[in-house]
Image (cartoon, rainbow, N blue to C red; front, side):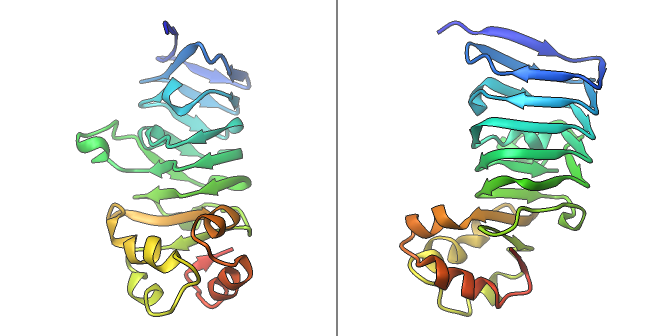
Length: 209
């Protein structure tokens, strides 16, 4: 399939609505692009969206189609932004080592709001999660998952959550500061009763829900 290539770079856009919705297009948001107070509508697969060196300031992202496994958010600077919609397997923050080679050094996230989003297996890397608003239950967020891993491993988790999630926390990048899951999907996938999972989550002060 031949894709149309759409480039946004080297300019500042303010108070506009960008519709990135053409599945026959590849969208490149690149160096020198600043979006301020914009609404960005996303309705394409992650493979159609490329970020690198872009600064988003006070923008709203409306994710109309579940965005899966999109790690290049770590090549963008996000300040005061709001996310709506479903994001799965996405990474945000500062991760220069992503992909085995340095990415744009501007990668960061601060003062952003995910409270209207559904996050599953999403990570905050190399940035302070204290400045962020995470979605509430049925999402839950493990803060400082690597540092708190010994504590989390010290209890028996329902189903396969302990084996698949908790015992594998050390496999995430060492800069991982927060890890968010969507409990209903996790519980179904790992044969864990949702009520038992929440009851255990409530006992940890390093988990937000």
